[in-house]
Structures are given as C-alpha cells and as structure tokens.
Length: 159
Image (cartoon, rainbow, N blue to C red; front, side, top):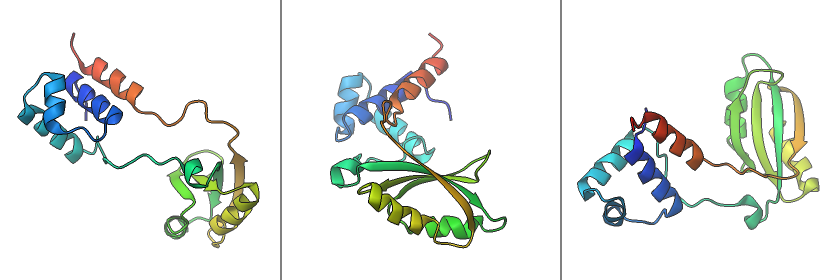
C-alpha cells in the first residue's frame, strides 16, 4: 500500500508521541478528526501500522548482549524449527533468508556466558544442521522506520 503525505505525517506524529489522541492529532495536523480516524483505521487495517505498544530496550531489562545467528535447516524441517524458535524468549526476530543460511535470528542474552545457554536452546532441535553466530559490538543505526515513511510519503506526493 502506498502512503501519501498526510499518512506519513500521521505515522511520524504517532511514532514521536505514541500516546497522542486522535483529536489532538487532528488539531496539530490541521485536518478533521474524522479524516485522521479514517486514515488511521485504514493504515491499521492494511498492516502499515502494526501496533501502539511500548518500545522496550532489551539492555534496559537485563539483556545487554545482542547476537545474530545464521541457521542452516535440514530440508523439510522449517516448520518445526520455526515452532521451536518461537518458544525461546531470547529470540527477538526470525527471518528466512537466501544465501549461506536458511534463517537469521536476532538473539539477546544477559551476558556473553549466557549467550551460550541461548544458543544451546536455539540449536536444541534436530532440524538445525549448522549455526553460525555473530555478536553485535555496537548498534550505530538502531531499527528505524521514520526516514523510510517520510521518503515513501514524498515519493507518493505529487508536489
């Protein structure tokens, strides 16, 4: 779904102030409350806006170590591996990929020593043939979406 300038402004405002109400958004954006509500409902129904929950920093709750594990999966075992990894709380993300591995996991741990426990949990299923892990040293560009939203809104805007 393409977004326009108003959609982009709504998303940016929500990202910066997640607790803002629709009435206040309409006041700041200079559009009718019904317009903002309809746009927001459409953005949610189309899956552009996926949630309104808090953003939690794993390090702040005791998980300062981040790592990425590339997993090679035995053919036909993907569903079992996915189900297994969904039970490991320290697996924050799982992506299926092309290239040398079949899946890429973002993991967190309480320490480097605890990372070994997490990796043992991750590979504790027969469907994983091989795992390669890289520990994150620094995160100079944390996950961000607002610059992309702004660009998408500009690309769509005819002015």
